[in-house]
Length: 115
Length: 112
Image 1 (tube, chains in turn brown, red):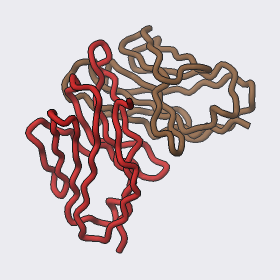
Image 2 (cartoon, rainbow over the protein chains, first blue to last red):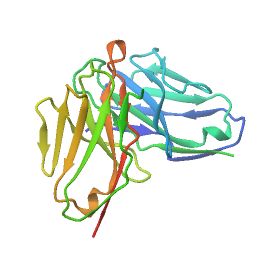
Image 3 (tube, chains in turn orange, cyan):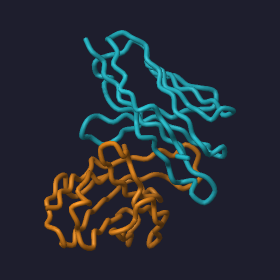
Image 4 (cartoon, each protein chain N blue to C red):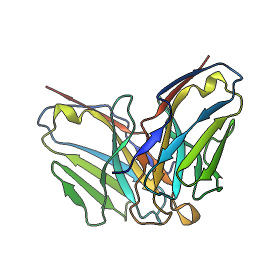
């Protein structure tokens, strides 16, 4: 069974802090993703990565950066946290792009509150 | 136009009812289709993939209509435990084939 592990379930940070959200997957998946989910807005893609050291912007990359130094680990960085980044953050992984029927497997989420 | 559109509901049905959700997608080149289920304050979990010929998994049936670009999910004999939000998911095109697009979800409540 695929396991995607996010380092924290709940986080509380202050405005202006630099925040690191870590995600590790154990299935040797090429693709990794970071989403945020807010009521009424659904899942929105922040960044994704197809391979080590590769990254591509999703729909809402502003205020975020990512790092993928190893295949199994994909980190989301909030350079200077703001209150509008209070949200549920979900990491996911999947097989190769273009692989037919390659669903996403999600971690159990990090609920971040920025005060 | 959004990549994936769903009726947000809510759908409120009694136990034992049959309920159907539809979802439309904009990219005619999409090849992968899924339904996910998300419980309150939990992560989305894969419910089932959707195959061209349609497929069934117990009480759940998924259909794909490529000509009209929609997929559907039918739940028969609804259980209280089916109460959740159901997300329609479709893959992207070209270089972003690995990227999946999510609908905003359809909320289902099954009451006793």
